[in-house]
Image 1 (cartoon, one colour):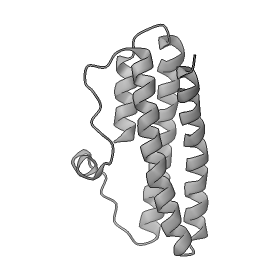
Image 2 (spheres, rainbow, N blue to C red; image 1 turned 90 degrees about the horizontal axis):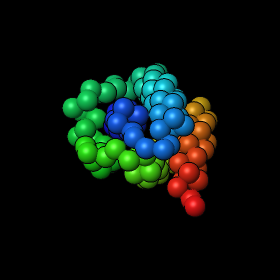
Image 3 (cartoon, rainbow, N blue to C red; image 1 turned 90 degrees about the vertical axis):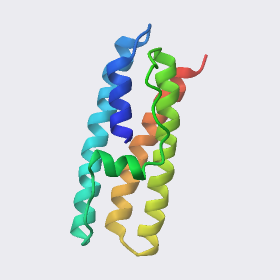
Length: 130
């Protein structure tokens, strides 16, 4: 869900920050797609089944719906920063479960993703400061 919301922001952004934010959002989406693949492959390696259809993801997502009419650059930045924070909360919960299970490989995988997305969130929040 976060990936598709980032893409919506990428496609619809307008404003003075367009030139910097359009490629930044794309880099977030590409990074997230790669991480989603790593998480899914790790889950299957551990014996799980992965359900990743758009319908399934929409039912399970903790993210609020992305406002369809958003265009202004700073509004996209704010919305994505909020959603990345929610995503990070879920990653941290998952890492805690992996840690309780003594699954150090999953902990390491999730820690790397958390570190990267904390930086992405910081980039967004810093661009909102005056």
